[in-house]
Each structure stands twice: as structure tokens, then as C-alpha cells.
Amino acid sequence: PPMSVFIAGTVALDNVKTPHDAQENLLGGSAAYAALAAGIFCQPVDLVGIIGHDFPEAHLRLLESRGIRLDGLERSSGESFTWSGEYHDDMNSRTTHKVAVNVLETWQPKLPASARDAKIAVLANMSPDNQIQALEQASGADFIAADTMDLWISIANERLHDLLKRIDLLVINDGEAKEFAGTTNLVEAGRRLQAKGPRFVVVKRGEHGSFLFGEKPEDFFACSAYPLDSVFDPTGAGDSFLGGMAGWLAANGHTKPSFAHLKRAVVHGSVTASFTCEAFSTHKLQTVTALDVKARLDQLKHYTHFEA
Image (cartoon, rainbow, N blue to C red; front, side):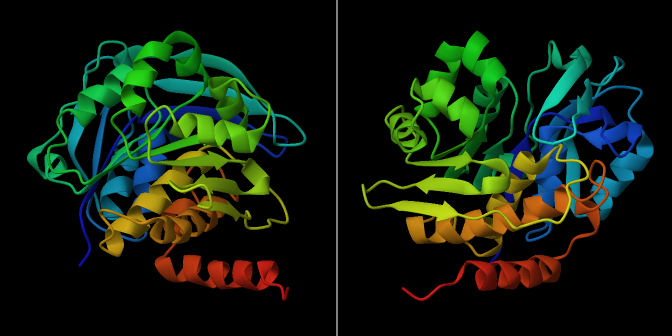
């Protein structure tokens, strides 16, 4: 039977400029993307985060319409966390113009009862302090996954190491994996990160797919990304990847997943993330169904199958 999942992280307002267009006050944040992705496979999903007085009601209605419970979403009289950035012509590099931390500055996650009982816990990208605060309330979790970024590797390295000792899965992008592990070899980086605590590590490689590292030396899986003809806005793709993984695991009752289960979860996460890149913000992701993912997954199997 489907199991519950909670996702804690940032819920933000994004101002995004790409070579195609520019839009403001978009729904953003690691938890928002991850929750929408998880909700494709398993509902309800508990969202834990904080927003300010300026957060549009339309964004909240959208989240609720996709089976996301907002009991753990704190409302503040301050201003919402806001990110402003610009993607360049190749869409692989971006410039962050402004980050307004606002309500996140003093926030401490508070999990509602439904989230505390969830069997799968997702600690989406946020400060390690906030991730640990959420983790300590997740009394029912059998499987804990966490994401991170270069900022926390630089300014909260010790707390990040504390976190890694307490989670089952670390998800991190390739550049950050090399930085954190202190090596230019991506395979070596994955194994070094495992030695810091998590049983499993996924290294995201953008348009080149991802690597999954398991507990045994032979437990290694390279997943291709779904090939897109064009990328419109890659914001939130990594968060959608993690949310898609967690949602698929919960939907299939894999609360203590094996390496084989995680291989399938990685593929579902990768395909889910591909939809995110096809429109601004969550505009494409919020319309995707499990059948859409299945159709694209079947195509990916065809693209990557070969006879030895």
C-alpha cells in the first residue's frame, strides 16, 4: 500500500530570466518542487516550510489541488524567501542576482502529527540546522533522504557532516560532490561521500543523468537523463528529481528500499525532472500525471536499450 511522505525545505518566490523570457513571483523553493513531484505518484504529501504575508494564495491553492497538505506550512508576517536569477545561453550556467532570506532567517521547522508519522522523510535543500531540526521530529521515518548545495558545504560543513551520519540517502550535484569529497573523480567522490555516513548516494549530472552508489562495491548504477529537444527553465529540476524518487518509493511501499528499488526510483526521478525543465517554474510539473511519466520512461528504456 502507498506510504506517507513528508518534504521539508524552502517555499519561495522566484524571479527568473532565461534567454526565452522573464517572469516574476513564480512558485519556487526546494520543498515546493519536491512536493509537487512526489505528489505525482503518492498523495497526500506533507509540506513543511515557511512563507510570508506576500505569498500568493494562488500558489497555495495549486499545491493543495495536487494533494499536498499544508498543515506544516508556517505563515509569517514577514516577507517570503525570494530568489532572483538569470540563465545564460547554454542553460547550464546561471547568475544569482539576489537572495532575500527574509522569513527563513529565524525559522525552525515544526512538523505536524501527519508528517511526524511519515515513513519516508525528505530533507530538501535548506540549511543543515533546519534539516537536523526536521529530522529530529521525524519519529516514524524508516528512510531519510537529504539534498544539499555548495553554500552549506562552505559555511556549515561541520553541521552537514553531522547530518550525513543520520540519513540513508544523500542527493547532490556533480560539482558539489567533487567539492565536498575533495576529488575531481566523480566515482571516487560518490564513494567518499558514502564513507561520511549515508548508505546510498546519488550524484546528479544534469543533462548527463545521474550516478547511484549502493552499499556493495558492485552496487553502481548510471542513469541517463531523458533527452529534451530544448530546455526552457531548469530551475527546480534537481528538487523534482528527489521528490519523484521519494514519491515513487512511497507509492510502491518501499520504505526500506533495496539498491534495486532505488535504481527504479532514480529512473522515475530523472524522468520527472525532465518535465520541470520544459516551462517556467512548476508550470509543466503541476500538470504531469503518473501516466505521463510512464510514457516518457518507456521511451527512455527504448533509447538506452542495447544488445551486448
